[in-house]
Image (cartoon, rainbow, N blue to C red; front, side, top):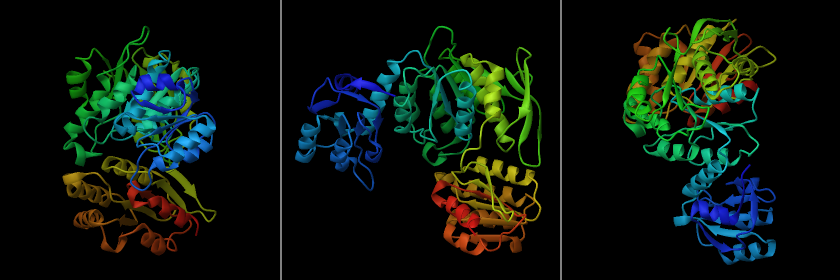
Length: 479
């Protein structure tokens, strides 16, 4: 993890030393005072409900060597710092977010030996990141984004968590507003980038799918150049914005494009694939030089195949051995709340995909539900999707219509007006009103449906995090 002197921190971030010595050394950085350990730096960030500056004294008492304030340090903070020998720093313009980005950029520059890979996209970036980390870890010391710490704070925390002894760094790079990717890529500076696809996530903030594509394409504009690694972006051959990204962003930046998909022109393509009754795909891949690999993925859904291609393409581009990389992916475990199948002793199975949702990922989850063996009833519980802006009604209508076309024994929608739109669209497309349920809250859905589900039922739970379908899953499984 990051190790610096306070003086090096000040030079990197243009922050000001308020108290203590510039010779103080810190190791590790966190933004949660409860996670402070001996010798760390604690960055106090203001929040909607709590202000991290209020916990500076507690961080000092917990062993922090540096506290970074985003407001004036009061007497209690200064007294504690003197007592414990802790340095106190104030962030430039009291901007903790920019402080973290600058600190991470400096740590990245201090470690040019890392092979850095950046992963973005509307759908599948977390799975692709996890696959890529598993692939590289078979032959390299690898540090990767934990969970989906992929924003303007999560990315710096990921980079600052890497050690000089690490060989590969896999960074998930999310964005939901214009300009965010440019700020992230200045810090990450990947040697290899992946754009999994361009969907509709955050379309409310970015205006259109083309706007999303252009925002994500910024990942190629500030790539690192190192002997032995050609700057490369991995693109899906089936995505309708890959040509735009290649023509208007990759080529002008001198970045090589690696296409992955099903066509013969792809550098890495899927030759064949089949789906088992447990929803796990078996695939055979072929590289441009004729090397073939075959195996069954441990993650459910046909959408996992494209994520596999993206991860394997990126690993290949960075110079990893392909057979070992493939074996690493085949040995993965499903990520919690991402198409995770959970069961009760009585035989009820729940596909927990409640972590988050977009229209595309809901469609993919429904395909998984319908591809798996089911002994009794097949049920989809779908929550509304956030951040769709003025496209919300249209896209929720499409979700409802798509779900109505599936062979479901029960279709459930949870949420507010958007859930009504999905339900109306499903009924318009001919889905039986007798098999459709509509609930305003997760708690109502759990209370009514929990006693209904039984042995042999297969239930999908999928929706935006704000809907809280993870509570529905726990409630149903606990009965």
